[in-house]
Length: 156
Image 1 (cartoon, rainbow, N blue to C red):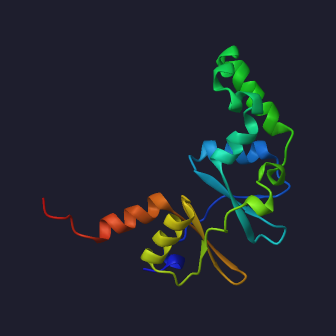
Image 2 (image 1 turned 60 degrees about the vertical axis):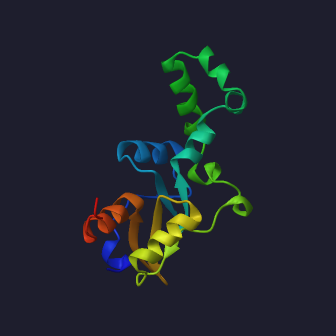
């Protein structure tokens, strides 16, 4: 099976979209990340949920998590939402020089090539692209399901 056969449609966000919209997409669809595309609809990077959280939680709370106890649940959530509401997707991305390689494979990539790319880049998803053709995304959960269902159970 090749990457283009495994690729699934995946909700995309643009650089200029509100960061809060990206956060809601991650939360509502239980996704580990969103794929960020340019104005031509081509993937430029992946925005992990952990990066969204990094920008939603105030820096002083990240530095000293015990300060989070000052907020009740509602107040803490409001702080996080307010921090995201003021930013675009582009603003919550790490600077280009600190971004990891784009987690991408070609449509011809095998299951093992996809798995190796995910392992090397520590990413829960890869983008499947051939030149100007975006096929979709393969998630780690989907890839593991394929791997586990195509191999026999090992002997006990």
